[in-house]
Image 1 (tube, rainbow, N blue to C red):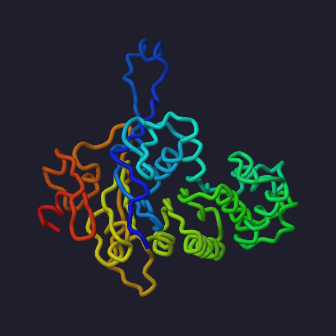
Image 2: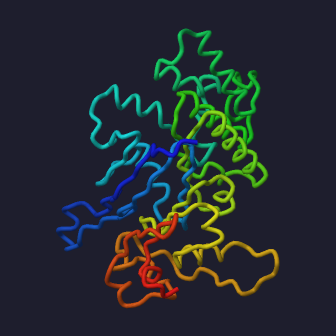
Image 3: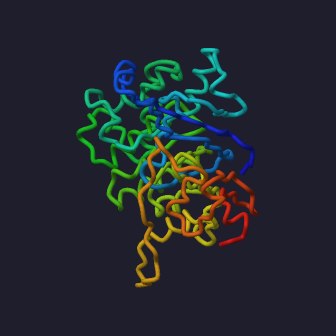
Length: 331
């Protein structure tokens, strides 16, 4: 498998102005409020691999997915696919080409499919939008092939979304994402709304499709079991930033960052080990994040430097970690 970088995010920031109207703030003397959903995120993805972002709710994972796909405006930073910075692309034909090559699978298969359209039209929409079919017969043939690829019947194309279960609907969503012949898929918690047994089926399908089609995945999830199943590399997010980037095996065998260690402690232990420490405290507000290392209010290894100075990613072996305690070998 080639190890070239297909996708790079560099110092990505996505901030939302949630202030009251200007006149209201002027009358009340209220300050401007900015929610820093993503605040300086950087990572890279190799072609043909799966890079997963994991973290607690509110850490900014889904915001990253929507910013990368163009659904949210980027405050600053670079999003680069195959050497092209999306922030700098103005040519309409280039934008169209990038849109075709990069598709998204959404979290809820109940909300992401138009209930008024037949499945064949839902899957065919990207084919029509990007002009990928020679004629109606070619379009029909492509739709039938996609249905078979995701484990559905050709006859299912005549049905409406309400006639399918949640797992089947997500298969339709995957078929729609694949219909533009993409190279890169953004998967925003695609199994979180499904039963556990169905989750495994969808993950196995995505792995098979990746091997067959050479796809690259950016996978978003809060479920460590799902992350373990699908990932090659994992980025652990906390309050809008990545605190650790590591190969999957290293995350579970040798986690470096204190937050990663505490996150792993939340996995139920079926052997009855009672020495596990639960992850205490709440994620601080992204409107008024703590100074220095944003994890320091919850970190058992925090020192004065952690409160003053924000840590940057340093390389340790194959992994990267942003932690003063790890850098100073205090763990």
